[in-house]
Image: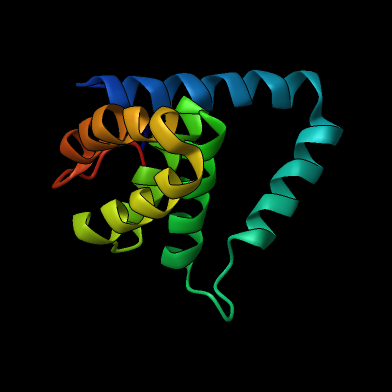
Length: 126
C-alpha cells in the first residue's frame, strides 16, 4: 500500500522536508560519504549511558550555539519525539545561551519556540 506523502502545514515541517530532500539528493550523488555519515550519526544518537532524549537536548544546544537553523528545528523535533518537555527544552536553551549569548538567545526566542508550537501535539514528518 502506497503512503500518501505528508504535505507540510507550517514552516518547521517545510524546513524538515527541505532538509530531508536535500539529504536524499546528496545520498544519490555521494552515496559512499552519505552512508558513512549516516552510520556515524545513528551510532552517536543510540540509547546508551545517555538517553536519546538527553542526546537530542545536547544536540539542540550545540545547534543553537553554532546558529544552524536546520539543526535547531531538527533537534527540537528530536527532543519532542523522545519525550522532552517544553521546560526541559527551554532549560537546554538556557545553557546554550549562557555560552552563545544574544545570537543563541535570538534563535531560542524565535525559532525554537516556533518549532515547539508547530510540532507539539502532531505526528508529522517522522
